[in-house]
Length: 128
Image (tube, rainbow, N blue to C red; front, side, top):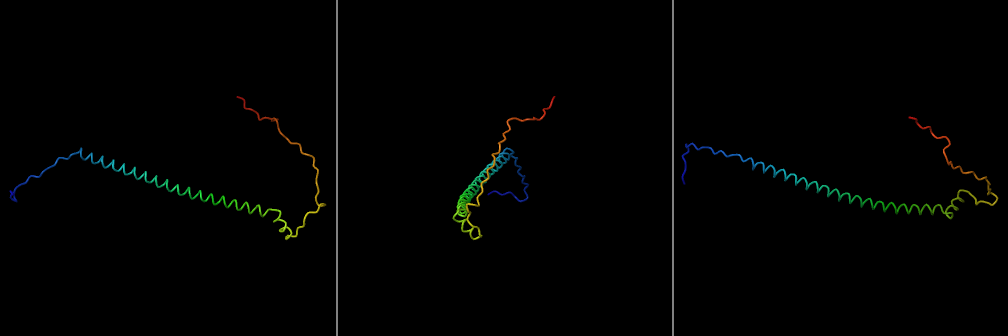
């Protein structure tokens, strides 16, 4: 092995800067960042779509539950307003059944129906 003495003036090596390699690396870094950003954006949209799907399914179940509750409430309303249910409640309040002499029929003259066929006094038009 051939060694140089320690006091030997060794010239420093200067490398040339390769700007085309640096630009290729910068372009590669930029394209990698764009590709990664695209994947992250697509993943965000995908997870948002999944979340909306879960929410819509939850709302669909809530709608079915509310429709069933509405049917039950309508049935309870019909049962409560049935004559068989109203009569005992009315007797508890002290009401009595109607007697034939209490009913009075009024004969009113039928009212004439008014159907305006034409406008009698139209709005004035603007003259130019």
